[in-house]
Every structure is written in structure tokens, then in C-alpha cells.
Image (tube, rainbow, N blue to C red; front, side, top):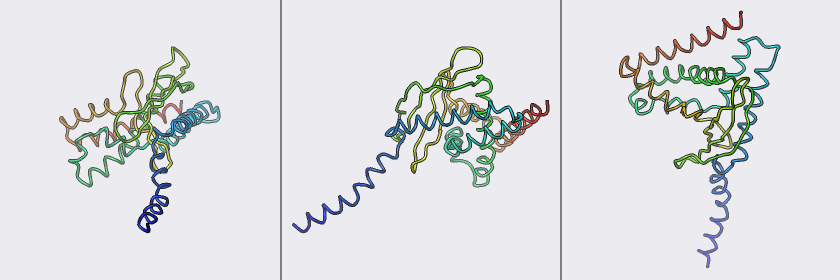
Length: 214
């Protein structure tokens, strides 16, 4: 009898922890994931429509929004794929530093090319795998042309949502860049890829500064 009582107490004490752990996945909280993407959209629209900002200020504010909303480390590792395991400690540090600017520039460039005006959520879809990720499916409304379908892959960890990938019009941000990176590593090595990433970030910063000055 005593053993059963102890077992019941243990289950009672740890059951809340198990419930919290089960709910700490994006797939179990679609409402929260949708609100996360909608809030991201609202903040982006507010920045891009602020007439008081010049292009440099707008670019900086946009990147700050996505820096907070994106799991940059996870996305960076995914883009490098199997090559990540072969990096030295110093190369990993350099790669991650370069990737922060590169990934944010990718989001900025893609949204600019699309002609982002607003975003409507049209549904959700569980992502494959056991990580509990969720796709928030959206239509990106543009200044010109038809709306574009975009799927934001979202994770939830420790109660916080983050973007871990983006698919739009059949283009997968992680896979596309993984192919590009693999090709550059084959030709120029890891150090060559890191140097290229730094150049890309510098070019993006120069373009934003030039647009602000014009």
C-alpha cells in the first residue's frame, strides 16, 4: 500500500512537468505560432512604412526584428549540412559570425525582391520529423503582382517561438543555400566560403548605405 502511495505522489509531482514539456512545441501551439508570425508581419510593415526612416535606418530596424525572431544558429548549421562537423573550433566561430549578417541579408533581400506589403496567415501544417516544428502558411501581399505563398517553419523552445526556415514559391531557403555552400566548399574550401559570406554581407551593407544616401 505504501509503495502505491509513493508511486502516486511521484506521478502527481512530475505530471505537470511532462505536460509543460509536451506543450513546449510549436505543433502543439498553432495559435501561438500564428500570433508570432502575425506580430512579425506587423512590426515589419511598421518599419517599412515609417516615412521618418531613411533606407539605412529601415534596413537596420528590419534586421533587428528578424535577428530576434530567427534561430540563426540552427539555420546556419542546417545550411552547412554535413560540412559543419568538419569545421575547426576557430572556423565555427568565424562561420557563425559571418552567417548572422548573411541570413539577415537573405531575409531582407527576399522580402525586397518580392515587394512585401503585408502578410495574411492562411493556415498551419505540421513539419516532418520529431522536433515538433510547425509551418505557418501565409500569403505575402505585394505592391505589384499576385500574392506569393510563403511557409514559415517555426519552432518553440522554452516558451519562445523562432523561425528556422522559409519556403516561398517552391524555394527552400535552407536547402537552396546548402547547395550553394556545398558547391563553394568543393571549389574554395571552408575558408573560401567564410570569406565569400563576409563579402556578401559587406556588399549588402554598402547597398543599403548607398540607397540611404540617394
